[in-house]
Structures are given as C-alpha cells and as structure tokens.
Amino acid sequence: MLKGYWMLRVDVADQERFKVYSAAAAIALKKYGGRFLARAGRTEVVEGTTRMRNVVIEFPSYQAALDCWNSPEYQEAIRIRQPVSTMDIVVVEGYDGQQPA
Figure 1 (cartoon, rainbow, N blue to C red):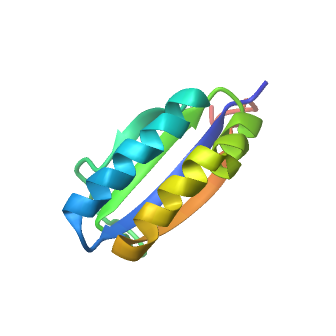
Figure 2 (figure 1 turned 45 degrees about the vertical axis):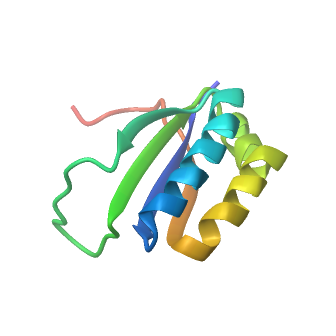
C-alpha cells in the first residue's frame, strides 16, 4: 500500500489564532497516522512562487490522507483556520516505481 501525503502552502494572518487551528488539526492528524516530514522550515524559492510556510505530512496510505481531510475533526479545524490564513492543500499518493539511475 502506497503512502499518502498532504502538501501544504500557507500564508498566516493571525499567528495566535493559527496556533488554535494547529492544536485542533493535531487531533485529526494523530487519529489518521499523520506525521510531519517538513514543517515551516527554511525555504528557498528556486522557481515559481511560494507562501509563508510549506508543509509535507505523511500518512500510512493515500486513503488515510483523504479520510483525515474529510474527518469531522479536521473539518472543525478548517473552520478555525479559514478566517486567519490562506492555504493550498494537495493530497498526493506516494510512488514506488522506477527511480533515476
């Protein structure tokens, strides 16, 4: 079974309120096995555009990633987040095929 990933780009307007979102989102992430691979660390835009924060969250499966997004717990977190941030989230299935030689 291939892993699933959330790829997020975030601009935050209210850091304190965003902390409330982060705590609420953590409930859903824990329930569905989400774990941070990258979270608001150093970035350098080498092509295209970005936002203030970039995040990658790994899930045990693509379905778990979708289930987390659709869960009542995460939907509640979204209601907290939306007034204080702009976020792009893409759910991506992992890859287990041929790699460059």
